[in-house]
Image (cartoon, rainbow, N blue to C red):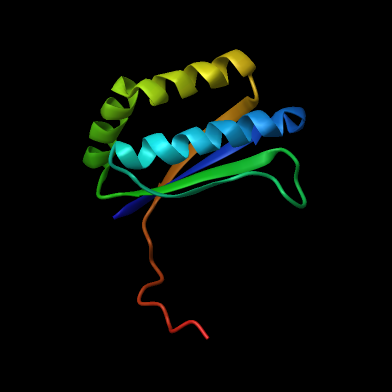
Amino acid sequence: MITCFIRYEIDPNKRDSFEQYARNWGQAIPRNGADLIGYYAPHEGSATIAYGVYNMESLAAYEAYRARLRDDPLGRENFAFAQKERFILKEDRLFLRLASTPHGELR
């Protein structure tokens, strides 16, 4: 299992647009095969940094997922929305694997 962390630098004056973008991915990403952990918008501290996080079985599964996402009507619409509204200033992807398991019991 790998986890994709997407770090966004967003226009702080267009946070509402980013949040709509995130809600759209909340529908499209799971429908196309990724285990979405969530999208996170600025709340306290930085007004410009946001994240998207989801799990995939492998990089090969990620590539197949991306192909499905490109064919998904909401996926295409959301890409176009981001390009038109220009609220994303920078986007970086990083793939990591969980190294801390097994986790202790939450108290």
